[in-house]
Every structure is written in C-alpha cells, then in structure tokens.
Image (cartoon, helix red, strand yellow):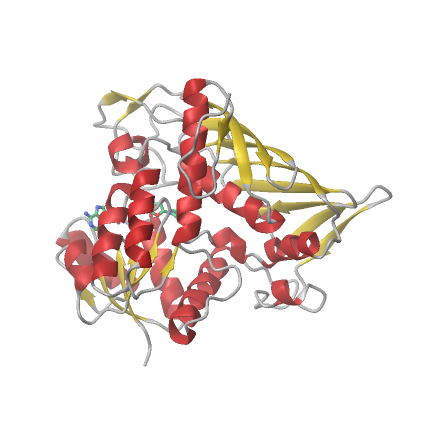
Length: 384
Ligand SMILES: NC(=O)c1ccc[n+]([C@@H]2O[C@H](COP(=O)([O-])OP(=O)(O)OC[C@H]3O[C@@H](n4cnc5c(N)ncnc54)[C@H](O)[C@@H]3O)[C@@H](O)[C@H]2O)c1
C-alpha cells in the first residue's frame, strides 16, 4: 500500500514536498495551512484529498503515515514532537527548532519513537555532489587542504523586502546562516567527510530596519504598500572561517543581500591532487582543476561513480534540478521506512542537530568576537 503523507505548511517548500511525495509513490492525504481557508485553497492546488483544520490535527491523524513539517521555523519542534509521539515518520524542514537546545530535545524524542526521521538537506541529492564525495573518499582528490565557497541570495536586499524569517520569534536568532548557511555546511561536511571543529564568524545586519510584510513568500517580489517599519535583529549575512578535524581550513560567505544572486550555492574542495567545484546553479557539471589542466565532469550516468550514478535519473544532456533532488530525497525516506535500512547519505535528525550546533557556534563567535569550538555532540564551548 502506498504511504499516506500529510503536509503541514503549504507555501514554497510545502508544495515541493507534496509533489515529491507523490512522485515517490506516496498519497498526499491532507494538508494544513495557517488558516482552514488557506488550507482548502492549497489542497485544491496540490491535489490533496482533505484539509485539516490545523496542523496539530494533521500530525496526529490516524490515517497518516508520514508527516512533512513545512511551516515557519517556530512550529517545527512542537509539530514534529507531536507527530513522533503519535508514531508517525517525520520529515521536518530545517532548522529543526529555533535553537540547539530545541533541536536536541526533538532528537531525544525521535530516539525514543518508532518513526523514521529526515531533514531535507536536499542539495546532497545532486549526482555531482555525490561525485565530489566519491572522489574525496576514494583518494582521487588527495588530502583535503581547503574547503571554501559561498551561498548568496538577494531576495532580502532592500528595506522593502520582508518575510517571517526576519522575525527572530518565528525564524530563530540566526536568519541567513540558519536558513542557507546550514545547507552549505551540511554539503561541506558531507562531501569531505570532515567535521567543522572551530569557527570564527562575523555577521552583519546591513538592513537594520525593514517595512514589515511577513506574509510575503520567499523569493516573491516586495509589496510594502501598507507596511510598518520595524527593527531587525537577525543577520543578513555572515562570513565564517573554520577548521576541520581532517586538518583543513575553510571559509564561507553567506548572504541574503547579494544583488543579482538568486540561489548561488558554490563549494570548492581543494585537495592535494585536484580541486573540485560544485555550483548549484550549474549542477550538471563539476569543475575539476589539476595543476596541468582544468576540465569538467559531466553528470553522465555512464561515467559517474556508482554512488553518483544512482541519483542520475535522466541521461546526460537532460538537466536534473531542484525538484529531482527533492524527489530522490523523499524516495530515500520512503525506502528507509519500507526496508528499515537508511540509504547512504539520507540526512536525518542527527544532521539537523549538527546544523544547529554549527549555527549556535557561529552566533556565539560573532557575538563574542573570537574562535568558538563546535563540539561533536556537545554544546559549543568557548575557546580562547
Ligand atoms: N530544504 C530546503 O531546501 C528548504 C527550502 C525552502 C524552505 N525551507 C524551509 O521550509 C520552511 C517553510 O519555508 P517556505 O519558504 O516554504 O515558507 P512559506 O512562507 O512559503 O510557507 C510557509 C507556510 O506555512 C504555513 N503556516 C504558517 N503558520 C501555520 C500554522 N500555524 N499551521 C500550518 N501552516 C502554517 C503558511 O500558510 C505557509 O503556507 C522553513 O522552515 C524553511 O527553512 C527549506
């Protein structure tokens, strides 16, 4: 029987989840939005069988196997906890909670519950990302010396640009880093196998006042007509240097105010033999640099490593994209539920806690203006 999926939160990413769940063979039995009216419109748009009055009803409903939590961040911990306690499998959007303590509480609930958990760090599902991981693990890139890059967007560039994410009560104390820097760090650790051990960070709130328009969807055009000005406490951008347990140094620039950049996640791994570059906006190829030449590696299932080829669902020259990543991710979640075995690389709540650890260390470093340890499994301690 096909898995019965329900989606709480039907904005940008809720719609992507619903489509991916259906593509992976699930049945979208219901949705819930911020109001029943919005839920009804979303159910029609997304082809869901029913509308739940509210998200709490959805996550505990008898006829639901898998709950997808796609609401604003402040609801993630509570909705996921209710779902896990009701015996559901849970796919919860990042961040798992508003802070590290909340993410840990949720992971503890998950550890005691029968359901499987997953967090959509979906950029892992580009075949070219798996190819970088394979080349590093197989020693083809050589020892990793440097890991660097950026994740740049521009949809919060001006004082007229607003969204619920800007409000710390709804989004969390970190905005740009928790929202998109977490994806970059997840990828950096995923492809290198290294763990970030220490960070030195600076953050900036370059737009200190915004005209309030929290209903504005992510990436939509600004419409500040009736908006009221408010102070902003969350960061627009962060620059982070780091060290890893594998002896590498790294740096990343994370920004939601970089004009003209829409979703530029760019990651370079410099190894002793070769450098590899993944660019999310050009994900069909990897750049490979060697001292004597630079070439590209195509997303061609015929030539990729088996781990990467598993995710190459279209022939070369027929571009795969963001929706495909989500579809592959949800298919892996369903496989984990059905077989009891997690496919290689499936991001779980442990990865969500990891993201929260790094975020907390970045905020502490920026606040205290010093290097901060990111202790594996422990609260970030301050290093001198
Ligand atoms: N993994 C990824 O690549 C990725 C990408 C985008 C967003 N996200 C995450 O997804 C989440 C949602 O982001 P978005 O961009 O879709 O936001 P959005 O504003 O487009 O959508 C949020 C939705 O939540 C609904 N909502 C608000 N309050 C609710 C409530 N009490 N009960 C039920 N629904 C409620 C709203 O009606 C809206 O449909 C965020 O946590 C974000 O971090 C992840």
